[in-house]
Length: 192
Image (cartoon, rainbow, N blue to C red; front, side, top):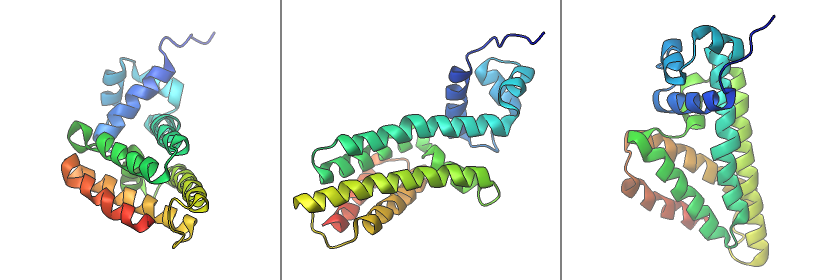
């Protein structure tokens, strides 16, 4: 008879997400994970298959929580420029926390690619969702006359995602919001 799982897998994934976000995949050992999660190695393997399975679950948790919240804030903003500025500044605030942990998705791309095709798909899906949400906000804003229609909304959205990726890497190098926030205004100038 199979044993009943004696821990909350959702809570374990959330705690693992935090640990991977702080340390990265390679620097986080199975022992680190079992100690941080308060579970045995057998329980980790039974629930997630292996360290990589737990990492993928953690990245998926990030996608459905923090990344999804950023997209919701864009969609809920009445003024496109303010919504985009707020989203970028909030991403900086989160990225510089804990001595510059950056963004788990960007960290995953930097650490695990090009070797890990599954991680590539997950990160690309997140970036595509961000680009599509930004493109829709920009398209609607141009139709309302809030912004100049100088650039194709899809291209401008792709620029903003690329800018944000660079900003999130920079947050690991210079984990100071006051040093990164002025860069947002430069990117905002591209919106018109």
